[in-house]
Length: 338
Ligand code: NAI
Figure 1 (cartoon, protein in one colour):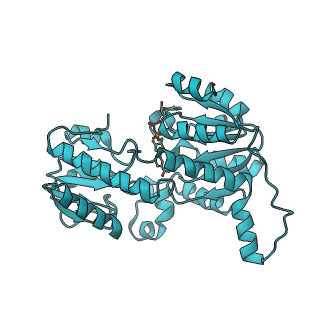
Figure 2 (cartoon, helix red, strand yellow):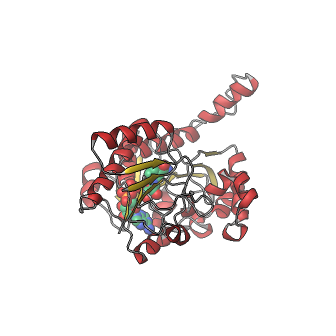
């Protein structure tokens, strides 16, 4: 079966080729470096199985361009870059990777917390840029005794809770579907979102992006946060209203932010492509500008959607993706969305 893998790095191609052979998967695989979206359609759109990563945008026009498509499988936990409703309309199943790196992403989120709380990036930058070992501007704060608010206690949220307990932090959490067993074992409190925002020194977001979580953190909810609190977002950019975040940081309402994801992150990271052939009407260019303001703020660390990126996690992603394809071909598809 003709199968295209998009956004594939050389080592991934080699890994996939070897595994496809070991598993004797009956697929004819093509490996493509580019992402897949309506601006990046390949010359050959006859693939029956397509595997994408988060930089792709698989919307209705992409589905329309692939007349033989039978399965789309994303090598990620979040699947908001695939128009699942359009897939459903065409009866094309969508599979994903439900779990590959809950520890991986949680470790990164904690890295962002420590980067901010101990000014680690600023310290390194100061020595590199000026050779100065002065500590005057590098005072941080202890995590012990501070309150971490975890929004979304799924796989990643649970890991970060366990880590925070190891740092002797108080933990509060919000989730419309609380896990009371886990709460009992680990020891933390579930609160309403409002109360969590009012009590937390650091808020870390671990929810999927969907209609209900669009701008969950917005001008009104950010206003509830403790003055000088920190916001960590490793979930998805549009869960936070960018303009409201910039304002809160400028006003000192927030003390800092650690952001692995941004609204309009594809556009922010691909501005040259956009200038050469983008669709301004489909984007919020003010948000892109706001992202640049955030990137330049000393109390903000922005990373390039990199929380998933460890050797171990990526191998688990590729293994699960091949399992998704194998189970689909066997007529017992696994890890379907919805
Ligand atoms: P999960 O599905 O295990 O957990 C999500 C949790 O959010 C669930 O407990 C759910 O009940 C809760 N939730 C749903 N709606 C909510 C709401 N309105 N308010 C509060 N909680 C809500 O997902 P997992 O594995 O923990 O991943 C979370 C997200 O992290 C993914 O959807 C993905 O977008 C993002 N992610 C980011 C990565 C990165 O590299 N930056 C890598 C992997 C995932």
